Image 1 (cartoon, rainbow, N blue to C red):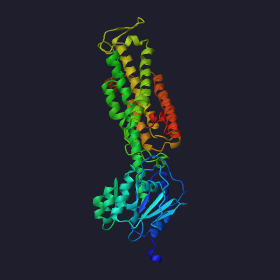
Image 2 (cartoon, helix red, strand yellow; image 1 turned 180 degrees about the vertical axis):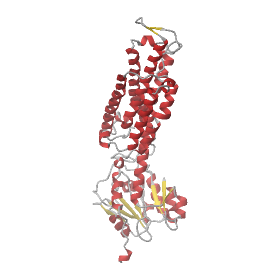
Image 3 (cartoon, helix red, strand yellow; image 1 turned 90 degrees about the vertical axis):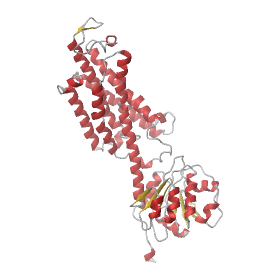
Image 4 (cartoon, rainbow, N blue to C red; image 1 turned 90 degrees about the horizontal axis):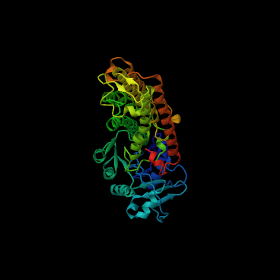
Length: 461
């Protein structure tokens, strides 16, 4: 009798708890006797917790692992949680433990379950299907999919092939005789233990999060690059960023920080969120609104103010800048007579324009260096998340070093048509950074506090 006992692998109980916190519904489908299957589920603490039925409307991804003994094919299938009826089964083929919210069902009962029965069944916290056939497994998967769930199934043999093929994600476990399962599945798992599969889900969520962060950061610098072009073509102002400056920003300054965000550690609530909906997009309207309308415009306003401050410091008003791009601001330009009566020579015009262009460049790049840290989290406060990604420090160092190289190295700044500006113009990006920090901390607070509010959703990417 002792030789027949094969306990669950270490870490399974913790993995089940982690799946529960992540709102992942686990079901077990076994070919063993109901008593054996139920005993296994309890050993895995598959029945831990209280009797409350979790509620919500999130799509649930699920995973599984073959764990014990001869003839057992353990699979877990997920379902979307929804409000369910309280219909009860009056049959000896169904074993219900109301205290642990665990239900064990023989496979032969699957074909007799109505839609109402499935709705009530899928509301259970824990469900175990025992003595199931390949067709019954596939029926279980189809029933879960009818509730708009994203269903993942694991299996290691020919009997699991139909369910693996039907599932949204079929996970074939590396085992003897699993060639049929591998052909039917989408993914072959070489280490199919449940803790590894939960860890894989965490990594996938982290990857999705970090891609969003990278996109939000990268798109934010586009608006400050477009506005100076508008100023030139519509109003005739001297262009704030020329094409060479834009190339240095896009191809040098912005690439290392964007790559560094991919290595950002997970937020503290990553595995406490509900899975994203089936139709969730990587680039959403809220993300575009944040990058272009909020963060992008805050940085743009800082660039515009720093740009005009240079001209104002030389007593050049906005009226003097109108329609001046084509005639002035180069070494071959004629003298410029200002509205105040002051006359600027071509050399003076070139220096002033170079400082204004450098001011726009500095404010944009330095503001993005500050903004990079705000993009390390989507919901958690930056101060709780901390600074744990050393690649960000290296990226920011490279970003600032290249900026100083382009602005202050003689010959290089001449090629870019910029001149080192006054010291006080470096204040603008710091002010922009503080505004971005306050805006994002308030935004994240309301996302955590009121995640389903219609107004908050505008800022929730």
